Each structure stands twice: as structure tokens, then as C-alpha cells.
Image (cartoon, rainbow, N blue to C red; front, side):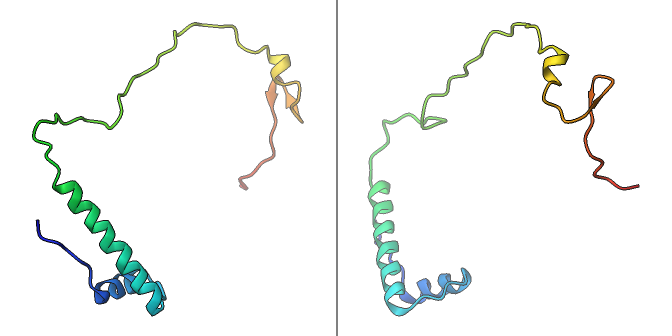
Length: 99
């Protein structure tokens, strides 16, 4: 596998695109970190996965369904008990859209 590395000019270019004002030490630090990251990707690319079956997800997916049971709702008097203003069994709210 060919060893890729990121040049300092490439780091400066990406920093410019990201509108980052980095000094020389920060550019060198990012260059080292990015090159280390590319090294990890190369390690992964070298793995033999020919006998590994592909998976659609990293973890097993399982839907959990609850039984759909009809229940009595909250009585209107209790639901409206803390309402600031009501009329004819409805909540009244301040008008937010002007005519």
C-alpha cells in the first residue's frame, strides 16, 4: 500500500478554506494529526476481510412495539384545571397574528 501524507501547504489550504487563522505550530500539529489519521486508515485498508460478511448496520436493530391498547383519556375538567383562560371547554390563548 502506498503511504499517503498531507503536506503543510495542503493543511494551510484547508485551514484557509475553513477560515481558520492558525499559526505555524498549530499547522504543524494538525499536519501530524492528519498524517497519523491517514496511517490508521491505511492499517484498516490492509485488513483481510474476504471471509467477513457485510452487515447493513453496525449493531443489530430490533423494533420494540407496545400493544396498542385503547384507554380512557384525561377528563376535560382535569385537563383544563391549570389553564389560565377557558371558554366553552376550550383553551383560550393570546392572539399572535394580527389582522
